[in-house]
Length: 328
Image: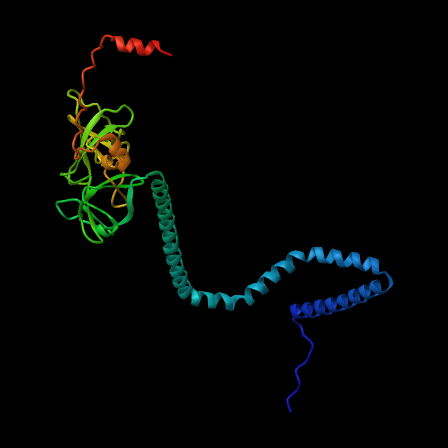
């Protein structure tokens, strides 16, 4: 039978010191524990002070250990979040795209409401409107500059009627169908509009250039009186367009002409208003009674003048007359 190993450390001083230190620590711990128990029993106030001091001393260590425990406990959550990060990012991107689309739609609806409110105010102010319509298409690739409305002869839209938006003049009706009509835009070279400068009434002629701009040529000879930033409005000459409708703004000068851009851009305008020609709206039809009073009936035969008889000559009084007057 083998001899059991001896518990004595032998001649190894390091082992002896370690064993002695462990005995000392054990005995000291036991004595301190007994002392604390005695203090807690016989002096609770002093024990509370000791406990508070120990808590203050060990506070940094406790906080560090608590953070380590929390980190270890949430390590699984970090791993799961890292694994699901790809799908979560994709979902967040889709949500951001949806929110961006909704924001764009909300901004578009806001702009539409602003345009409709302006058009409503314009319809309330103008008394010669025919119908309010929408621009449903335009001929951007054609050599002619046309736009199409969703209103036609069924809504009393006739060729030659002016078309305007809240921002300004758009053009005039070129052809009219049953429920659609084509608008000859201001930028077409065959559309000529008499205009004037808004601030000092300098007359000019606006002609389309087939490239989205208009050419403004002054009627007065000499130097070009226009400069960039001038606003041109209709002058009312010709009887088609009402006066003071915004037409274009001058952007640059080229020799004796000015180049401007329409204030009502068909690319941004949706709702427009069709009006009656200015002369028709100004000259109201006369009532039958007023016409009869101003223009007498020419069909009736003229009254023949009454025959005038010369006044009878005064006859001298006779004797018989004198006798009759004398008798009572």
